[in-house]
Image (cartoon, rainbow, N blue to C red; front, side, top):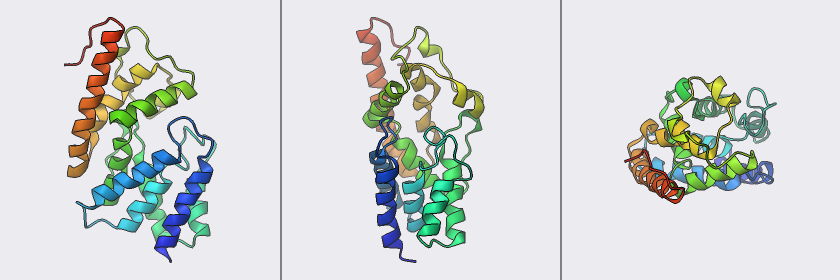
Amino acid sequence: MNQERIIQDAKSFIQEIFKNDSSGHDSDHTLRVYKNALDILKTEKEADSFIVSLASLLHDVDDFKLFPNNTDYQNARKFMTNEGVDKETQEKVIHIISQVSYKCEDTVTPDTLEGKIVTDADRLDAIGAIGIARAFAYGGAHKRKLYDEGDEKANPHKSYQEYQKHSSSTIAHFYEKLLHLNELMNTSEAKKIAKDRQDYIICFLKEFYKEIGKDCPLK
């Protein structure tokens, strides 16, 4: 199994599968997650770098928001099978992907170091300046309003099913999800990076409320 070739092919695969995306889940997002994962790997040397690399590159290829009709991670499985990835490695990658998504109060803590790294890498791309840009890209792609009165009272959804069905403004999404991601980081490196990105989100929201003539509830 030529690991280097498989990683390069995975990069080409995501370029193709996400070529028409404008929701913030494009191939650039995946490549940033991959880079984040490599950065975290530098401080988590016991992790399997190939598993981390492949899972980070394939983490969104069956995401329910993008591929609602996919079952059993069919895109990821087909790619790995075609690339000659052995069954044991495939199952490790799929297991990581199954634990990556934020699922409100149903969110699980990954049970492998590799899973923690990939999950942290993905969450880091949802906060900070990039996270803000992606939130509004997703909102625009799904015709969501920028802000609704009372958004600051929004809380994380009670279940993943509720989260899937609910549609709110982009600012509400900050309170429902983005402001809570820094608390869910698993690795020490991700926690360090998340702190600065969390501060940036709070600064943005303060300026947003100032410009619409309201008091920001965040301190």
